Length: 612
Image 1 (cartoon, rainbow, N blue to C red):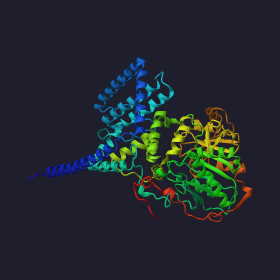
Image 2: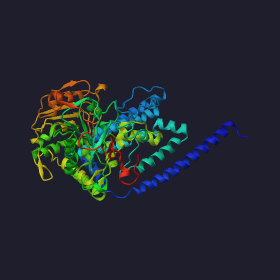
Image 3: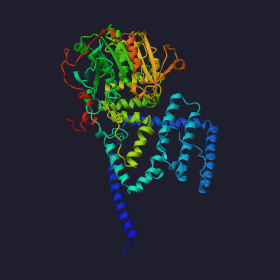
Image 4: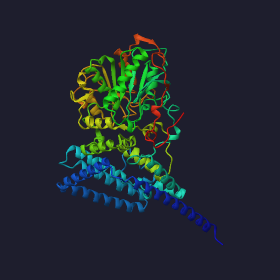
């Protein structure tokens, strides 16, 4: 007769055996999925070639400086000896002070086991010492062009962070505990989630970041009331319902980015920039861009201008009877807005824009940041070849690229939680938006990457030609308000600042705290981050910051004050609130409209379109 422990052990063995069999089935299916994706791709091949070239250049530089290599190796040997001594002391119960600790913002090693258990503590310190040595070694390399050194640092960081002990089952204490507690069920669920994410990826792996079932566009995000009053092949124009009895005479047109969707400016009622603008008394119109597919492959930058801001201005005149607008733009939408204002200026229609606001907008692309690593000539040629073949750039590929710019926070943390711990991601509206991407037409995106990022031609007088008109940002006399953010890694402020030096008209430059999104979508009631102002515009961005004054809270009220004091939103010329449909434009459908609901799988025929 078996004892209770023996029976219990037999049951556990059978449970583990079942889990292992299920894991094996998922693993085989996953390998099959991966094999089907291993066809050559020109863009991926170009990136791999650039990576090999960067590491080869780094190795050659190191060979020319053997003393640097010797010093690095000697320091690592010394560190290993100290770790070994610390390990011996730990056997006696004396952990002592760690040789190295994670940086303040590094959340990978927050579990207590990394500090309290000698095994995991040694692994963590070994990794941190190695990663620090790699970073310092690359920083001290001589004889490399600055671009190649930047590329090498980026690629090395990607590899080093991929090797972190937190990313592996047996060296992550949280994952090990979870695996023992669930008898491997976390790994079964993780493999299933990995297969689902892989199926919803284009290039690379788009990890699930949020519970997508928790949100619905028009129900709990993008809910500011309004109506679609105009549409064409590329846009729907939304007019928002007023919340004040009177409104400023000049309507306001928002030109959002078409990389991701407009509702980053209208996530929730408590942080919606759109709602805040409506509540200030602006008649707000907003462009909702179409999610393009292969049929839109030939759309150009000029088409985006004509069918976007210019068509919207014409529609607004029909709706309100006003011949001019105040433009508010964001990210690539701001780059388009600058192109549009320059085009209108060159065609003697500059007065159609009373003022223009650029939020986190690149016009001078002198420093594209780490995104520039992936936009060398060979890599761009690979991207162009891919877009020529497909007619578009899959927005999921773009999302994967942006996530790698913050790989620990936006990739590996979810990788560990989803696939190793087997957890379901939490509901978070911002991350829902981040994963709700849009495709990019070949005719527009390839031109944009080459003419703006690679060649920086927008800052050249006549460097860009749109519909036969050579534009010049230096001729713009429209009053301009630039707001950038200090920690922005997409539109770095040390580049956006130089766009503010281009127009000949009056310019105000403001620097917000935080990053590309949080620093822009920063409602006043939160009183967060703060911002800097400086009436002077010296030739150097560091000189501007040195002379700037810091202010607590959001930049939004400062912008509203700028609008009022400049007369662009004139409090003495308010008119009765304009309701959508009162003018010559008919109401087509309630906001947010159908364009913003179009997902990439629906556009590409990978999933049936949703119906109301």
